[in-house]
Image 1 (cartoon, rainbow, N blue to C red):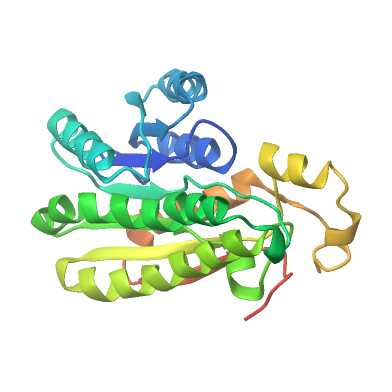
Image 2: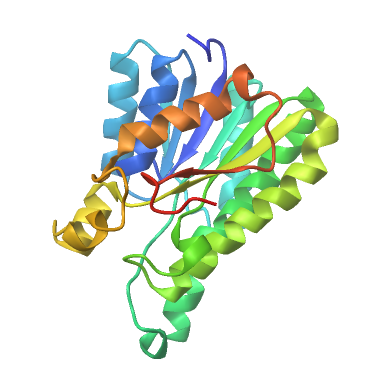
Length: 248
């Protein structure tokens, strides 16, 4: 129960990595607010959290809409009286050759992945600064370090931006006792990656020293660590979870 009496917002938690991280935090004692555009999936995650004996709520929130994000943060603070953890997981991944990327698709990916992370961080910052404590965990990607791996250039660029933003925010919030870190997953088996790869993993496996595809729970375990007091002296870091596919 490393996160007992802590409150957390997890964006994009209707499925995949977001759901796994929300459930992992709940198992460690945190109370969870689930944000997603998909109401049914968000409610299902909420029910799973409550089945673990934790309090939870679910809201439809568009992280690319600043007013919607601020309103949702205000509701969370009114309900819980504090915000201890923010996990910025909401994102979209499109696959296109660069010359085929439309301006609309470029803007859509940037708005959700990069701008959404910025808006959510900006909204919780005043609360965490008053508390003089908080943990912010952003989701980057191996693609943001090496270019597209089963992803388009717009996705890769957005994740590179998220990881650089993480370092900037970590410097700014360190004097307030707030830790800001990012996780950069490699190829992780989720509904999204199964759809993109059609379940054909051989091309990826040849480049992964551990010889297997990662599981969502393995990313969630890192998120729990970063959200806990055990990571109290860790900030501005990008934690790779990729089976050795990239060692830097």
